Image (cartoon, rainbow, N blue to C red; front, side):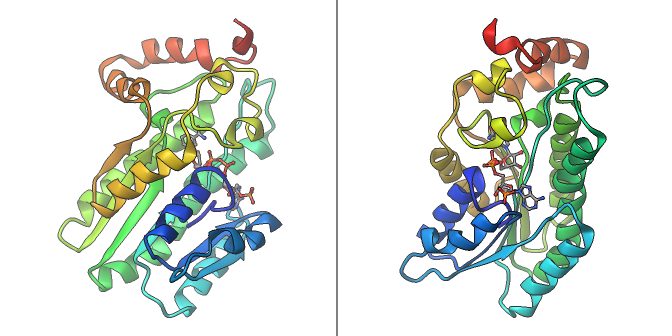
Length: 256
Ligand SMILES: NC(=O)c1ccc[n+]([C@@H]2O[C@H](COP(=O)([O-])OP(=O)(O)OC[C@H]3O[C@@H](n4cnc5c(N)ncnc54)[C@H](OP(=O)(O)O)[C@@H]3O)[C@@H](O)[C@H]2O)c1
């Protein structure tokens, strides 16, 4: 489980621990080393690894650690992700935008490529990608983040079809706005989206784990608004979707 130190990843890890899974939890900062104490349950062993997944060498070392445990991976949850809010040209740095690509896109492909083959060899496993409702619409001022989630969504669904009949399923989780550190970290608190109502991470995790263990292709979690957004995303042309998104994703819209 990547990105398990907080938010949706922590809630997913707690849900899986409740169900008796042993866990290997990973995140970038030192806080992850304190996560096992918060997650331990009778019958669920929790190990933490501190890893910066934006660094390819660290992804290799992380996968190596997983494989040398010599325990079959029942669930691979690729969840860690960050966003960046603001004008692509004037407000954001190249470093921050590339970190979104490196974490949300490149490390997801890298980790899947290193871990999924063993699951296929064993004809067993569940793979989860935390995509987002953001995958259903391009968004100005979060153009790279939404594109990263669209990538993950297509990657998950393509891989799922490819693995049909192997015993390994792939599920894309599509949460809507959820109460986590995400918005503050992405610099989104001055947007309508960042300041608006949010779903509870524990509730989101329950829905996701249920869909994951049932081998569903995707799950749109939380409120009816999210489910409606997923449908609208398939119906409207991109130029209309982006105009709608602008009203909630542009800096300063929180006050309007
Ligand atoms: N919150 C929402 O509304 C929402 C909606 C849809 C989808 N999502 C997706 O849900 C996922 C989890 O986000 P969240 O909302 O739970 O936010 P969060 O509370 O900020 O959690 C992000 C997690 O990712 C980890 N992470 C960040 N950079 C990393 C790196 N370089 N290497 C390894 N781990 C790293 C963080 O660990 P550190 O703190 O140690 O860096 C943390 O555990 C993301 O993929 C996000 O895009 C969120």
